[in-house]
Image 1: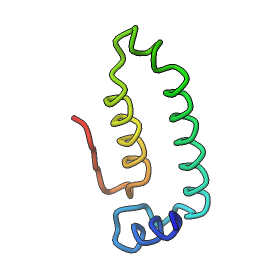
Image 2 (image 1 turned 45 degrees about the vertical axis):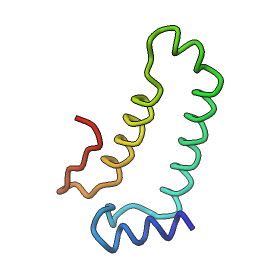
Image 3 (image 1 turned 30 degrees about the horizontal axis):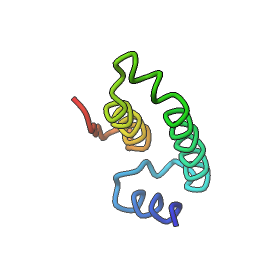
Length: 79
């Protein structure tokens, strides 16, 4: 299902058509799983150091959006 979202984005121009949809799907799955596990296991430690987990997730998603966008297009979720 996620791979079809990637190919749909490639068709509408929001995702770089040079990217391999299966590779992108597997990597996004792995990266997201790692970040979620990290936050789950370290949330108390991060909170003790003033880390805003919501902001951390926004930055994580912003990195994905920018990495997937075609080179001629700039998209950001955060400023």
